[in-house]
Image (cartoon, rainbow, N blue to C red; front, side, top):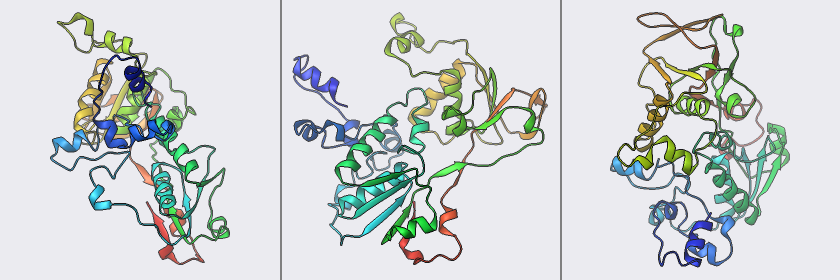
Length: 348
């Protein structure tokens, strides 16, 4: 939101402001401020995934929250289509953007959301320290869809019959993913949960935690486990010893939990963006998070998780599953006795 920008100009602290990534997220920031529509500004979430990361790969620079950025000539202005009734199942980022684009093209749009709020797993991602901006993306879609006249039905657990009852001309499935099921002998002996259970507050871990899965989700979960809240400016300056001027670097801190990340093969954090991976891994190392790879999971005993490496390692008491998730939309696509033309069904 532009409060800081407008305050600086209003108080004459500067004559001009320069912004880069925010204009990738929303090139109409200034126009929306002038029109008193600040709540409709699409906020940069500082993820770097489609801007700076693409730059260093010599790929087209774009924006994760605005995929049309730098593709304006390719996409052009969306053509108004013959009005149809479009039903979108799911209100995560994919479903919300599908609903927005469909509404812009002139369609009647109905979104079916099983829970009581939009955003899907953006609500989980926003729990990670430093990622609270993800709530701004949810705020943007909430206001944008309202202005576009999109109907959202909360608490609607979509079934084939309930979808057909709405008489749609087209259906878009955007039901996202669920954590993959995983089991080991003896898992019932310890408290276990998925990353979704932990980030949603359903699971309260203890002081010694093993994370199975060392990709981006696993690293984010480790960050949350060792640093519950997002940093403030003061805490950041202290953490990086900024005021020393001569020794400005991250400082070791005693963690509130003992956390270990386990991954069968590959590097911990592989797949993270080049411009953010080093910073996140540095944060975890400063909190003494253990990294273990090239291993096999064996069992869970009373002592904790047992893995097989060159030497057997009994580790942490609680187990959080943080590996890749599975598609959650197939159950709709392959329901028996479908009474609709399958070409009208789309999955994203």
